[in-house]
Image 1 (spheres, rainbow, N blue to C red):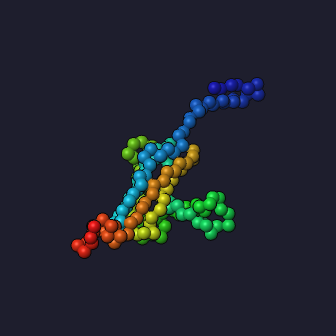
Image 2 (cartoon, helix red, strand yellow):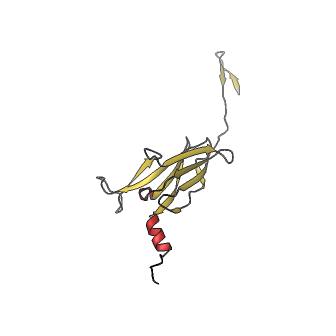
Image 3 (tube, rainbow, N blue to C red):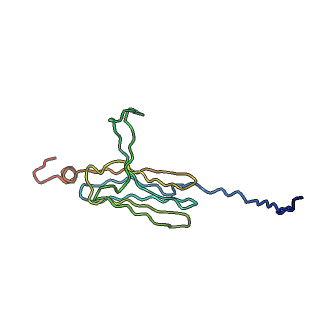
Length: 155
C-alpha cells in the first residue's frame, strides 16, 4: 500500500502473511535394539520440520561425579556421536518426504560399553525435538552358554 505524504515523500506499508513454520517433529522414533558383542546394531529416526532440521545422534551417560545432581540416578551427560569411537558411524540424509530427514547410527562391532541410551536430536530456527532408543548388548560367550547347552550339560 502506498501513501503520499504532505511533504512529498512516499511511505510504503507492506503486509506479510504470518507463516507458522513447524518445529521439528520426530515422525519415526528409534527402536530399541538387542544384540551380542561382535555383531552390529543400528538405530534410525525420521524427523520433519521447516526449515529443514539439523539431526545429530548423542549417547546419554549418567554420572554421579557431577557437583550438581538433578536426580538420584545422576546428571545426564550427552556426548555427540560419532566422537572418537572408531566403531560408530552416523549418517543423515534428506527424505523420504519433503521437509524430512532420516538419520542412522551404526555400531560395528558392538562392544559391551556401547550399551546404553542413544538420542536422536533435531533442531532448526523454530525449535527442537528428540527421541531415544536403547541398545542392549549381551556378551556373545554368555549368550551361547545360556542359549545352546553343551553335550556335557545335563538338564
